[in-house]
Image (cartoon, rainbow, N blue to C red):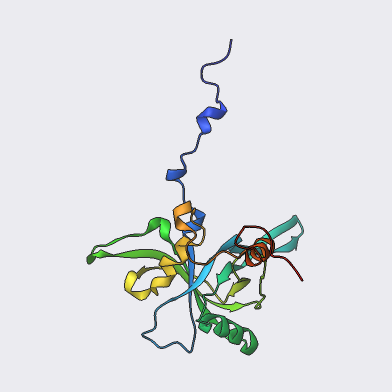
Length: 219
């Protein structure tokens, strides 16, 4: 007879609404040449592996054996960086950071925890993590049927700091575009922006059809 206290797989059902959504992690950036009043730019979304905080260790040989000594931590942000049409500022700035070996500010915002600002309930605040980082390069990912983006590893110089950012500090595109990049699209969200391309054969037959509906006689 089965024990009534036996754990079954049905007991492990997970309510997705109670879990953090990875698509709501959005990254922003600032550059040394930005003005103090500039808003935080949209950088992109997290990649398959995103934030790491790795603790290094070293071996110390003693008479009684080997012990491990904790070393420094190394943090990285791996970000799919997306760029909008008609605005190459972020792309050119990242490339400049790579070429001139300059650090840039990288923000990691967790919109799972976005909440109304108690000082102004019509606006929101969002918690985030900030660090100064060196981008490891500027590769261009040009996959067909995909958005042009660069998958970049940002090596944090020192340690990241946690804080809260107000809505007015963010470029609206950061939360308007960033949060929609991986949203599910319905049929009503697509179409109506371009004319269809005619089939060459149909176009030829239509252009060479007589009033009777038969193909025009050729000389």
